[in-house]
Image 1 (tube, rainbow, N blue to C red):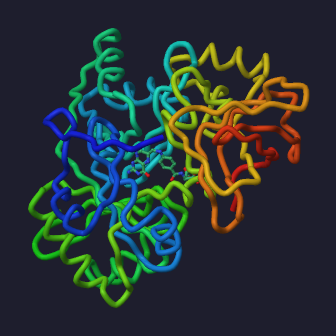
Image 2 (cartoon, rainbow, N blue to C red):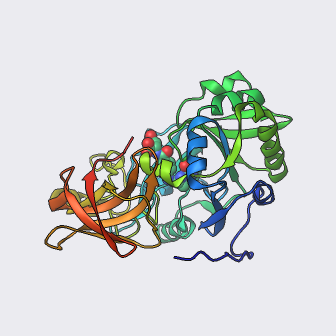
Length: 369
Ligand code: THG
């Protein structure tokens, strides 16, 4: 399929870092939360190898925050997720599926607890703010809900610790996975979490002041020279190998959290109250008939502008590939697919059409690495 330029406008929002990444050679964008999200720089494969070897700075401002404050904020946040947050602590980040009253997935954000009555829901690509406002209005909750001007810079890769320590001091190396704290640099305080949408390690800086963020961006490149720093972005190949799921691609509002393998974040036995709890109990009892799994295909390329159907030898539907890319590590196309129950055995074979030719592949477990 041919690629066309994307026209910018106020509705398709830029970020405080857009001028910088364009000067540095961003080569493609996707749209995420109505905002520009870079998707490649030199090339997908070059960026992939660089991310796994060195360190990158990512403009992930499109990971927007939904801020919930006020007396009933904890109650509202809990109503939105099937993960039990009753023992949650300030300074922690919680990966938490959001579920609607039908037990279907709304989003898979990281929920940051800033205070007992202040939360930042760091969302994937769906309009969580309206879901939150709807519940708050319907349940007459005493809360304020807004999208604050927070623009995340991620620092990812094996040299992320060394680079961040040069700016923020050695203390930052002690920050634990999915914890956050405030760190100073040149007169500004930055909210920094050890997290990020890669499995190469690193941090996310939740920047609250545009000018401070742009300054930080430039300092990261200055200080990062000795670590061969480059601009980067969430990498399709790396994130599929690591099975970091993407809302809207791998699962959406037609799927339930069991089908998306979120079992460990579904707490049905506690007293907490959340939307869709009874529905999820029913789904659990009945059992699911399809789930996300990995696929490997004997081919060297695939275009993923829509779901692709997988067939068995008798042309029965095995499932649907939802994300895929050629992996230079596996020397195959690898993908994340919704697979029907009779085909859950690893090494089950299927056929898939790519560029008008039939190729063969096998089902496998996630993650790939
Ligand atoms: N960082 C921040 N916001 C985000 C993302 C992020 N919002 C959008 C999107 N990414 C949300 N989705 C995910 C998906 C996976 C993870 C984080 C956000 C993730 N998962 C780890 C895993 O699955 O191994 C860890 C989960 C855990 O231990 O709880 O990191 O990246 N700010």
